[in-house]
Amino acid sequence: MFLDNMTMAAQQVIILYLIVAVGFVADRLHVFGQNTAKRSNDLLFYIITPVVMVQSFINMDFDIKTAKTFLIAFACMTGTLVVGILLAIPFFNNKSNKNSTVFKYAVSYGNMGYMALPLCYAILGSEGVFYCSAGVVAFNILSFTHGIWCMNKGEGKTRFEFKRLFLNPGVISVLIGLPLFIFDVELPEVVNSAITHIANLNTPLAMLFLGTYIANTDLKAMFKEKNNYLVILLKTIALPLIMFCIFRLVGISGALLTACMISASVPSANNTVMFSAKYGKDTGVASKVVALCSLVSVFTMPVMIALSKM
Image (cartoon, rainbow, N blue to C red; front, side, top):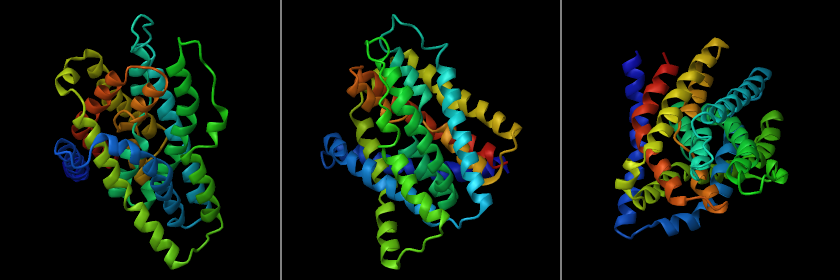
């Protein structure tokens, strides 16, 4: 059963990374490059991914049990982020290493929007996206508060941007989708069709963009940085195994457990690079750790997903 589940999960992960490979080749052939991907990133971040989240609410029938499960998912995925933050502190708290904050962020925050959502949809369908949406909200709340503080630490800037707690795509999507879910609103078929077509763009675009980022990374230097391997050990192996034990101890099971494990085992977030650029950190270091962590997750994620389905 474990091998069957791992094979099924591996197939889904491989499908995603085949699209990443297309993005990699497209960049090398100068058909679709990193600069184009960066300019298109706002379309994915502000339009397409929020539509996917809203669609997940529309496709779920409201009942008290489902609403409670969403709150439980939010608690579980918030817990995953908090454990990740705590896990990184003992290993990357060296003030003399100017890149410590980059590595700390890479361990703490996983690729929720571009990896967890597409993978949850591929394996669990709309139900998985519904649960994963709770994780995206938790991610946005913590990344725009703790994440910014973490990146600014030591630079004389520790101000939280409180407005971003609400003015970000993840929270706004839930504020739109939640009333539709609670009041069981049925949208016109033409609107549903438009939403479906836009939502279907999320996975291929996210993976193509990731491929262009990897294509512009110095692959040789990526494998030489020792801290990258420590990030991989903590982010893709230690964190999901710790969370698996916690989830099982508190009785999480079924599709919710799988969604939580997908969210716990995704590689470092692309925000590691974006926040590094915004707050004056080394974007080269950030790109390398995200790229290597993403490559290794091809092998680690199927194992963690299979564990959740035993």
